[in-house]
Length: 264
Ligand SMILES: NC(=O)c1ccc[n+]([C@@H]2O[C@H](COP(=O)([O-])OP(=O)(O)OC[C@H]3O[C@@H](n4cnc5c(N)ncnc54)[C@H](OP(=O)(O)O)[C@@H]3O)[C@@H](O)[C@H]2O)c1
Image 1: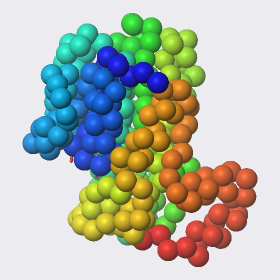
Image 2 (image 1 turned 180 degrees about the vertical axis):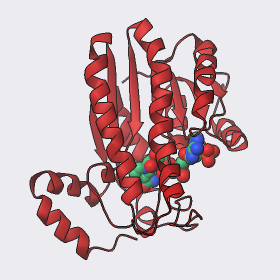
Image 3 (image 1 turned 120 degrees about the horizontal axis):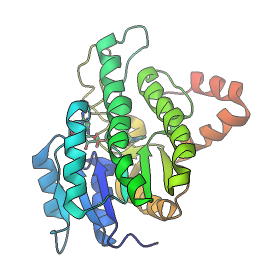
Image 4 (image 1 turned 30 degrees about the vertical axis):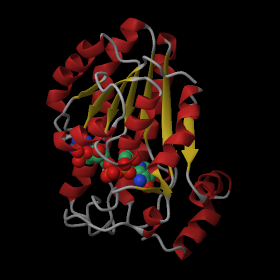
């Protein structure tokens, strides 16, 4: 596995999985572009990296501001002359009953997790097509493969990514571009603290799944070799990953199990 001198653009790099990816790829000698909304947090992440930081560029990005993505992408390409890998990691979760969740909350989750994500990919693709190589990566979830209570919109946003990126993979194969969908189980990050409730306020606490989930560092250690192999779909987590296979082969059994399980 060699990511040395690879130009890697990571969104959602200010926290959690994205932050751990910055440390891991920096350790591998990659050239990084790190993005999210909170530039001071990106600065903290950059400061935490050991050794030479000259190949870590901070590029502020709001996934919901799709009009800004073309200019930001051009800026990103100018930094190193190319982008070898785009990791679409930035995202937000949700907790609320489907019928109670406000439409503007549903739209906000879709704006970040789906529309913002695919639009950034759309902007990067022409540059990769021109170079005739590239790797597009997107952070889905195990709930991108099945649904569960209180996460209807989050699950829908991740399912939508599978349809879009699976289709894209078939289109860009001819340009030597690979597409990887990552489906994490529970990873101990701030994702539930930032999850939107039915009325749009923040949950503000860590879910028990995340509390007992694997660390972002451990997750990243498992992920990098799989990314190096350019696997098409990657599942990493605890026993919740088994649900992906139960859904595939015994969907009614999973429905029964999930109805009886605590999902908070
Ligand atoms: N942790 C888990 O258990 C788990 C499981 C499955 C999938 N995932 C997925 O993993 C990805 C990373 O989440 P995490 O667990 O690391 O959570 P996190 O610690 O809350 O990180 C989320 C990241 O997304 C960024 N972000 C949020 N809204 C954004 C926006 N509008 N524009 C740009 N960036 C935005 C945040 O940065 P700013 O606030 O600075 O913008 C932050 O860096 C997400 O896509 C999540 O759905 C996580």
